[in-house]
Image (cartoon, rainbow, N blue to C red; front, side, top):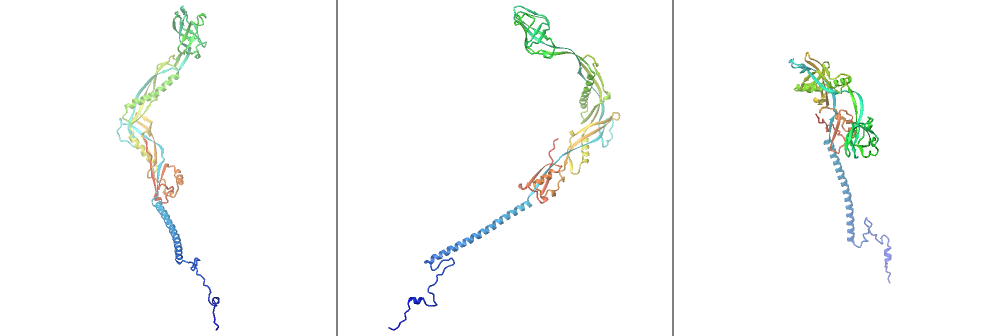
Length: 438
């Protein structure tokens, strides 16, 4: 046979320069494309993976933008609060100022209008300058006394349960349940089966002999009769003294002093009624014109005596309408520019007599007055620059150190604020006075 060259399958595989087997291709996720028996399923997996990657990137982007939005909202709110704080925040400080009392006086001359109608000087007023007679009397008790004796006395009912009458002579002894001895004041005859009321007195006149209701035995009777004839008291015994009263010098002196006081009160009532068209009157007793009469002498034995005194009363009467204005005007000259009078009533004005001349019909009087003063509404006691940026505690410390302030109230807007604004034009100060009670 001719030589024929046949190549076996093993010889073909071992040919140089050619690969016997092709490597399978894989995708980037490590999956062999040649290994998948189903190309359509591979495409679905790729699509799902791509979708998952897209969703993950979407969520990452969505979270990023959400953070930006929240930050923007927070910054906006902060900006709004800042605008409200600086543009709309304000504080109203209501101040109630302290009141102080000032006292002053002035002198005036009262001229009797009946003797002069000339024009008046600044310190002169028309009125009445006169004298009027006045008298007063009263009965007084003498304090000097001499004890002449003491007694304890009362009444008893003597009861006779015997078949015969029983006579009892004066000074018959009666013995009480507590062994206190009394005696009959007068002789009595107690009928059989009857009773008689009689006066008795203590054998010893002492305060401790005062007893109440009691049964009395009669020691002078036969013992067999003492339970049948006896006495009974219903009322308490009474203690008394027999006194001789004597007028002493101090009785006369005290009576005169009391009458002088009563004389002045009577003069104010009587003379005040006579000059009631005037608002004010000063009435004084002329001690040099006082005379007295006593119906009794020092050392005289007398329980009661009467004293009468007579005198002249000096009367200064005038109208006070002009005086009120004069007092207000003088106080005004004493006050600082930022203070004013808040209370000056007629009840705060008093008058006293300095001297008088009945010959010239003039009198000098002193006018004393007291007023309450306080800060004006326009007073500038607080500088706003001192309040700026203070917190509430610092503000309270600052205001508490100002003696011109009695009380205060801080009104914040918005209400949650607890700090004074930085801008002084956002601070308002109001001075409010408390109501005045006349």
